[in-house]
Image 1 (cartoon, rainbow, N blue to C red):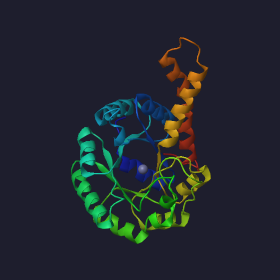
Image 2: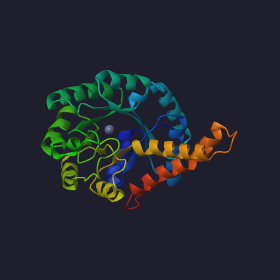
Image 3: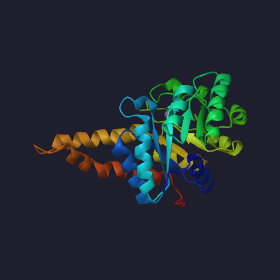
Image 4: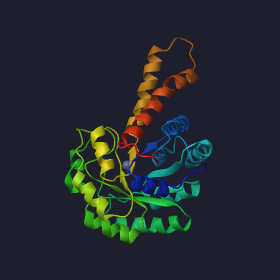
Length: 283
Ligand SMILES: [Zn+2]
């Protein structure tokens, strides 16, 4: 298969009532193993990349690796550039070959966010690239202020935002936060339901790591479709490699370590795919 459009995968997920994990990747193995997990579950997967990591691996390299692996995959694979916080980063993602980009103007005033998002959409849609934007602001999971209702997505504003920008999906703030959480998050399910009933495009959950699985399942049942998983996947790599190195026999090779941690990393993605399909829907 070639890469699938993210907007098509998300529409199907929304219609069929399951969620798709968007796994933040950082090297060849993190991409390859996420796709292997999706193949084992026979479900679609979104590979996404945070541009802040481009000092370690370029946008073009991520595109080339993912296209090659998607071509061989037995399930649909989409590729997305996470959190472009400027017009220039979103453009560089498109030029590098990302078929979907996020433009994040959520920390700007409403009118500035509308203008920035609409500008990116105009260019992106001209070259058949999907755009995710954010309204409300998903901040840090470690900041109590960022998790409070002041930052949540307002449904009236969200309707206006989508009308004026024509974005393809919307990241919403409903009690979620990025990175580790200072306390167990409490998602606002009534707000998710209202946003789902009033908005015509797929809804995206950022900060999907460490939200209790019952809450994640409930968010799927309330109609959310894309669930970003970064912190927990990276942590699985780190902890698995640390365990391997602490227990490795002398003269083992680095590549032996990669083989040893492979199954725990694939299992992690399996579990997320299953959790986000609580009613066992088919893709
Ligand atoms: Zn995010």
